[in-house]
Length: 315
Image (cartoon, rainbow, N blue to C red; front, side, top):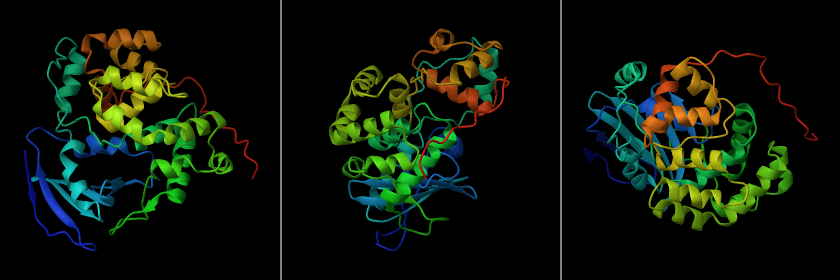
């Protein structure tokens, strides 16, 4: 791994670097999965570039990533630009440990892994951002969750610096999330149980962040997250996948996931218990198996019409 700095810091000028990973890397498949829908205000995919807006200890930053033959070219703007460039290796999966990962016993998976050697587990380190996003996705469709995320982040987040392809915003910090009025959350389409969970979790945002990042392993992190009211195994797993690059996290309770995994591995749908049994041979890498399945695009045939979400908001 090498990282070379190619520009002096300046408030209005990009800082640039090139990250040269020592492992195969598919940038879009690795980092692109962090995007929450096509209108995500924190992340934009534009003409082969991935743009991200987020907060660092030094301040807000905009980061642009582009993969080329000589590595991943990164440019960053804002007071947090230096820290943003420091995060590029983790985003590209430098901490992802493939030790013990072996799919040779399943010829289908072995072929998928051969075709997608560059998929890595991205790590953002931003526990609260991932947790807030996962809470918004509880028990609703992706369209509803992404709409709520866009509405709240665009309104309460901070405008990102730099020549972004469209206006972008960094997600709010904990002290802003905790003060968002209930009626605003309602207008964004957030149900009362999720609204309460957002406020309670944001009130403990700093301690949650520290505890999760310093926990010894995935099980310890899961125990910390699920000890919070309103946070179950699904929300914990989704948070750990995005913030920590947890290669073993499985989102138990997902409406579609068990069916998709069962269909991909056996040709038949299954339930959560069946999914966990199917994934057990790859304990430690269960999320990696799921990522490969979705990268290959093996959707289970739909058996009914799409859900038409009801909107009970008083407009």
